[in-house]
Every structure is written in C-alpha cells, then in structure tokens.
Amino acid sequence: KNEVEQSPQNLTAQEGEFITINCSYSVGISALHWLQQHPGGGIVSLFMLSSGKKKHGRLIATINIQEKHSSLHITASHPRDSAVYICAVNTRGGADGLTFGKGTHLIIQP
Amino acid sequence: DTGVSQDPRHKITKRGQNVTFRCDPISEHNRLYWYRQTLGQGPEFLTYFQNEAQLEKSRLLSDRFSAERPKGSFSTLEIQRTEQGDSAMYLCASSLVLGGPPLSTGELFFGEGSRLTVL
Image (cartoon, rainbow over all chains, first blue to last red; front, side):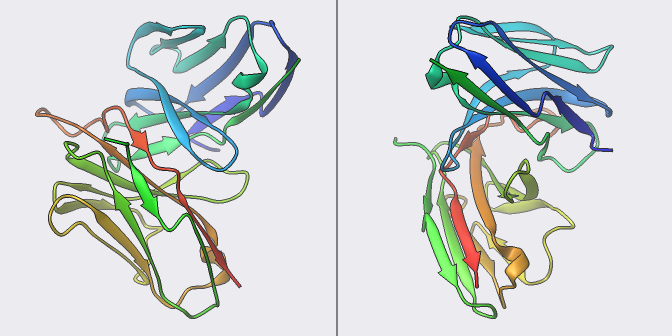
C-alpha cells in the first residue's frame, strides 16, 4: 500500500463544475503539498500546508491532520485546469524529500 | 530570475552509455532536489543537497548514479552504463529553507525536467 493515496485517479468534468480531489496518507507528516503537472512534465507548486485551509484564486486546499486527509477543490472549473494534480508529503523522520501520490488526471471539457 | 532550468530537456542514448543532466536552481535557494518520474507514476525522491552538501540519498540511487553540487549552485546528475530501466523524466527542484529542523522541503520550485530514453 502506498503511503500516499489519491482519489480519483481520473476525473472528467464539465466546465464550471466544482472539483474535489482527495489525498489520504498513512504516515506522520510535517507538511503536505499539492502540485500541478501539465503535459510535457513541468510541475508547479500550488499549496504547502500543515494545518487548516488555504485559498488561492479558485483553488482551495484543506487538511485534517487527525484524519490524515487532505482535499483540493477547484471552483468554477475551466479547461485550462486540465492537468495532473499530485499530492505529496514531507514524512517525519524519513528522507527529506517528498513522498508522492500517483496523481489525479483531471480533464475539464468545454 | 527565470526559475529552475534543466538541460538537456530530452536525451536519447544507447544502453551502456553515460549521460549527465544539469540543473540550475533559483539563485538564492539553498536546497536542491532530484526526482525521477516514470510514465503514469508520481515522482520518486532520489537525492537532495543543502548548499554543496549531499544530505540524503534514496535506495533508488544505485552506484551507477552520482550527483554533485560542487559550489552550492548548479547540480549535475550522472548516470553511468545506462540501462533501459533508467528511461524516465528526471526532475530537479529547489527551495529556500532557513533554520529549524530539516523536516520540510519548503515550497518547491520545479524545473521542466530532463526526459531520458535509453534504447
């Protein structure tokens, strides 16, 4: 079992829909990251959080440390939001890199 | 500053050849990370540097792999005697982490990656 699990693996939605991507992890963490990867490979950091909630534009990220769960929400989705969204964690006591989920492939249709 | 840059973006080589990738981080960043990503999978941690010191290496980094960051600025990742299983995207990221225990990478800034194909 992976230490970081994302759901769904694939998601297709219509423009304007509210999108939720979930991330569960099984280890103690010091921080959780949400990343966006477009075709071609480039990765952009969206959020880094260790508690509560953060908002940036149409993106909202929440984390529940007790439940070891985080969600990424996209409001008023747009085709340009189509990408792979990756959840990653800094594990306490582990190698000081990130442990990544496999990603959620999101397609927003016009 | 234009962000993290990686070179080359694409490399095709024959099995058994050596390849070297270069990463130029954001200039004021003290941390530099290397990750590997295969098709359909999330990235996997390979190694990281704080300034010029290599502080952690993954079990994935076999003895054919070596990484350096000699002056605490750019970094190179060399793969010797490449194998077909080395085909992947090699991602570099940098961050600025000041003080405190090393329990977080800080906010990471990624390069576009170097895609390796071993024939």
